[in-house]
Length: 405
Length: 119
Image 1 (cartoon, rainbow over the protein chains, first blue to last red):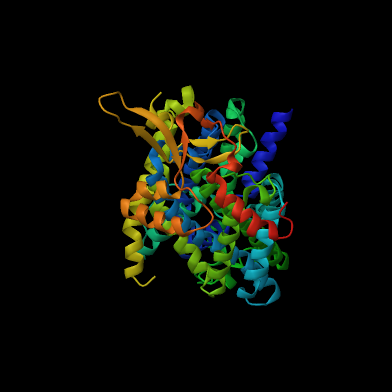
Image 2: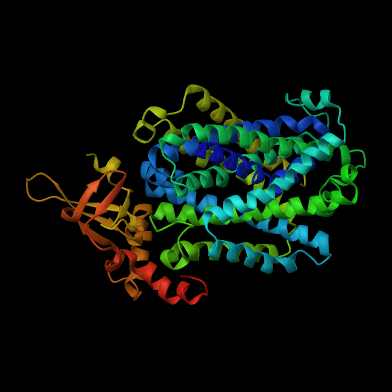
């Protein structure tokens, strides 16, 4: 009974916490520019993240290590430090995108420019982490995040041509703007396969004191939660294709994004969109901020736990405080949050091998996983998708820049 | 036990289980003709910087000398005080009384504790 409750809560958390500014913006743009054609990228990213999240939970449950802790031990200080610098820079950009996402939701609903919201929202994120416990942050916000299911309801209500939706699960070559097509594909993959997501998941498993008895629970949560989450992203893409493409809009300004649910739900669509965007980005901002502090604390060996009062872990608390201040600063510069989003997702994709390759080596190390090491299937799925993402990123990012963005 | 696999970079906790840092370095003593012996483990920013590059190590060392917060960096724990090396390295010391937590305690006292709601 307890396990069943934990599984349900875990699934709710994964589904409610799945969507964020990156998946919304990239899927909507994909739909706007290429119709249903890029659905395969969302599915491929979703498939990879199912495997990575399952592996991350298994590592924590069997070895009692977070990914960061295990990487520092297995690959030494220098590799940890390199990863720390690269991931911190990329993740900080992702965090400012999420913070910007909440601010955009507020601008759309109040008319007051998004920069004005950076400080109050940054303060809110900080206050929730400063005073909240892990359970409140992870589960509370994710349960509210279930509002994002409205995208699935909306997509079904719009009666898309299901045959075309399903046939787009198979990758096809673009008929126009091929460098843009591959760039959006890379951004979609970067938005789905975010290292902060599976790194955070292993920290959460340790915070919730998982042991080997949780291997089954973990598998069900990872598979169901992440598949259903990916379906929400598919729904955003479908809506993007049905709403933006016929109107010739490119979803390249955030004010356009607000139209996403309007055809399906009328005025309520606008309200649902604002709520979904605001809550999804707030949840992601909380997770990312915490993960950046976890990463430093676990790698350097400081005290870390979101369940302790800040005084007991001064360096951990100071880290997330500084991280939030930096993200607020980036939003305050007034840089277009949507541009930051797309750029940070592409950068995530390009830097994926740095975190995923050592992680996979750990997942095959019996010193950590005992008899629960990866099978050939999980290894192959992750290696193939990461390799594809990396190659696409290296080829398409320069092309996109040369092509004038 | 293999020093690199089972000791280097492991989490160090004190006898009460408080986290102190990670094993940033291992000190091995070589003395005339005898077998080398492990004499201590090392913790701290100087040791970490040294692992990146020697010149960065010297830079961090000179900064650390001028700071009044830490008086000993790198901080060494004699091998005789290392209780066991499994998932974690347990050191038979009291974390808060060692230089390993000097920065943690300084930040707690001077910054974090001054923000409302810290305890």
